[in-house]
Amino acid sequence: MTDVSGEEFLNKLYSVSYKLYTIANTQSFRFKKEWEENLASLKLEPHLVRYIKIEKEKFLTDIDYRIEALNIVKLSFEDGVNAIKSLLTALYHSYFKDSNDFLTNFSKEDQLILKYFVAKEILGNLIQYNQLDHDTVPLKYNILARNYFIIKFKEQSISEIQDNLKKINIRLKAIDLKKIMTEIISDGFLKKVKKGKSLSYSLKQDLVLSEEGMKTYNQTIRPLVDWPTLFYRSYYNIRELNVNVSVSDNIEHPEILNKVLQKAATQGYIACHDVYNNLIEYYEKAKDK
Image (spheres, rainbow, N blue to C red):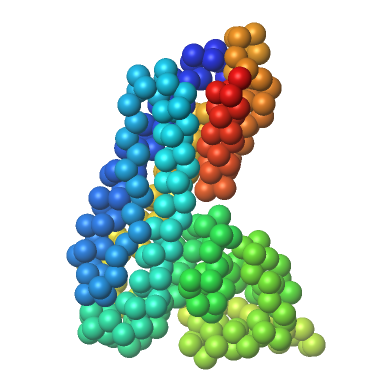
C-alpha cells in the first residue's frame, strides 16, 4: 500500500472522482444510444448514471462542496446498479415477452436460446451484481446462467447447485429447485444423470444461437447486452484510493481515514459505495470540529 500525504490523498480523491465522471458520461451516452436504437419501441426509459462533473479547485479547498460532490458520486454508484436493472427489466419483461422486433427478428428456437444466453452473458459475468439483484430475471434463466459453465464441465447434484446459488443469495428448497430444473430440461438445455440412487444434472445443449440468430443478435441488442459487464468492471473500481495517509501529516484521525481506504482494494458496487459513504461521514465530522 502506497504512503501519501494528506494533500496527495485529496488530489488522488479528486482524480478518482473525475475518472468516474468521465466513465459515467461516456457510458451513459453509449447506453442511451443503444437503448434508443434497439428498445425504443418498448416505450420504456433507461435509468442513466447522473451527471457528476466536479470542479477541482472547489473540491480541494471547500469541504462543503467536497461532501456534496462525494455524495453525488455515491448516488451515481446506485444509478449504475439501477441502470443494469432497468435493462434486465426491459429485456425480460417486455422485449422477450411480446416485442415485435424480438418475435420477427429471431426464429422460435433462437428466441428460447436467447433468453438463457443473455442471462449467461450478464448475470453469469456479474456475480456481485447478481448478489444484489436476483429477482428481475426469471429464476430458471438465472439458475442456468449461474451454473452453466460448472455443469458444462462437471455434472452437478441438487445440493451442489443449491450451494452455488447461495453465493448469489438465492436459497431454494430442494423440491423447488428440482421443479425449476425440470423446466430447464423441458427447454432442452439440461438432462438428468442417474447413477445408482444419486441424481445429477449435465448439459445437453450449449447456449449457441444459429448462424442467422447470432448475426441478428450482433446487429441488434449485443451492444446492450455487453454494456453491463463493461460498465460494471470499469466503474466500480477505485483501487487508486487504496493508500495509506501519513499519520504525521497533521490531519484529523488518519487512522479512521486509512481504515476506510482499505476497502478500496476491493472492486464492486458494495465496496465503492461504502468507501464514498464513509468518506462523506469522515469529512462531515471533520467539518464540525
